[in-house]
Length: 227
Image 1 (cartoon, rainbow, N blue to C red):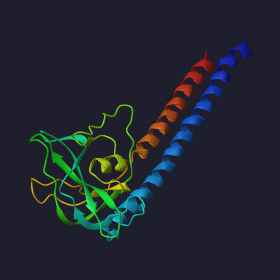
Image 2 (image 1 turned 120 degrees about the horizontal axis):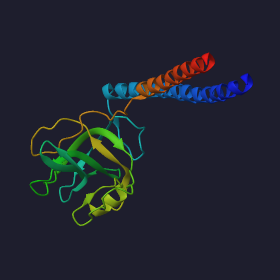
Image 3 (image 1 turned 30 degrees about the vertical axis):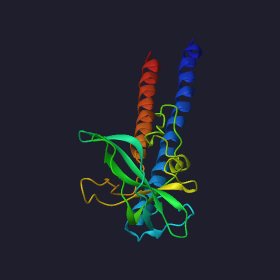
Image 4 (image 1 turned 180 degrees about the horizontal axis):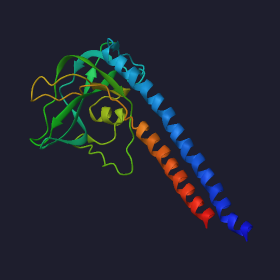
């Protein structure tokens, strides 16, 4: 009888040990991700205070501040995405920057309101500091691109460039950094993008679940032994 009574406890102990190993392993993995993410954010902070690097036709490393000079084409502009700010619907404004001796690039100048109709494109010489954003294909939940109105929901430089009359465009988009100087101008990004860092909370959650499981098993095993 005693051996039969010990079998459920032994089975539960084995299952608990396996579960604890998994939960603790997940917690340790999240701590490793935490250190990796902290190093990445530190590099971004350093890049934000360093002088911008001249942008060439080659794709620079991610999270690098770059600088491009040229002339903005004022004939057409494209819109990317959809975003509400305040009480206004808007999107990101994209135009072509022609550079002497280099390929043209797409520049995401910033958010513009679309409530009052299509915004006016900018034109003329431009000196833009920003960061590079790689192509982003559309997902199965993404809205379809509106080629007629040049409103896109997939950040594809080739497709957007072709709609703006550029056959050969750089395989990336330059996102402008800065401050809005006029209300009728695009609102550029004000900082380099930073990845979300919730790994400490995740690690504490996994370790907390492991501690709770150990406590529940210990209480159950004590009561089962006393019976």
